Image 1 (spheres, protein in one colour):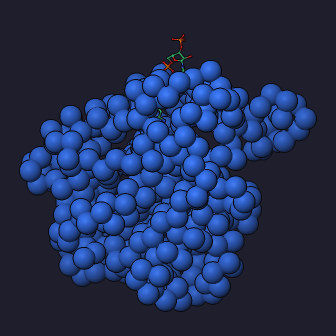
Image 2 (spheres, protein in one colour):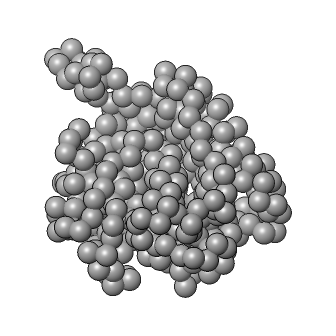
Length: 335
Ligand code: UT7
């Protein structure tokens, strides 16, 4: 499927981010589990991550949206739809989207949460593209926000060193320019991956009970090795597929914007694309894996460093629980 089939394209006109102040560095993890700074850096690339001490995922999102409003003077009443990509909603229901709309007094929007774990932002961009492309909606705000610290088991060295909390958002707007904004996408799911990365407790399968708490089922479980093997292939292949079918040579790509789960997975994707390391957005060393927030957080960080320019060809790529994986080919449009 390509942008040609839509009436309009969806382009980014604004963005914002929020990371909490509290930093957990690798030394801290040396003090709570059997690990080393060196192991964490060489196996993952992570040096620090942030945690939100007070508040919920909606607060990460609200702060990111406020940052966007500050930067671009956006009137929130002009937003038609709010999509919140998250696996750590404030509650099962109402949706975190509703909580955010209430906190920000967004009375003119409708919205919903989207659950696709680390691919949440990429999947939400695809939905925004469709909502705008069909011609009914003009502005769709996509937020990736996760308070991973609430589902992280800080006694499990396999997972606790990986995750952090953050929120970031991008605002898509309708454009008639068919060469701007999202130009292509590839999205995949393979449900057989559900046995390698999950949170067992709290849902309708295993409602919260003394037993689920005792068994630590309210935390992320990951078979790291199994996920690594498929993530390395999945992320690289979607990025390559987008390049191949859009005739993009390595020189045409300004940046790969990968999900930040592991520097080695990012590196494998870069190699498959045949691009140099200077063309890869990386901030995993600062924030760890913030699930749905990693990709928009990268975009904002690189923009703030003056590294993004209008017309840049970006390849967004993700891999996450489900399994879910996918990529977006996007032309950058904010000066
Ligand atoms: O974001 C959504 C998708 N998720 C991913 O893409 C993550 C994919 N997986 C990974 O990134 C990696 O598998 C991890 C970073 C999670 C783990 O790295 P790894 O190189 O695959 O390590 P491993 O799980 O194969 O473990 C190697 C060894 C094991 O010890 P033995 O069995 O060889 O004695 C682990 O027990 O490292 C041990 N280990 C640790 N050692 C020190 C596991 N965690 C730690 C730790 N510190 N924190």
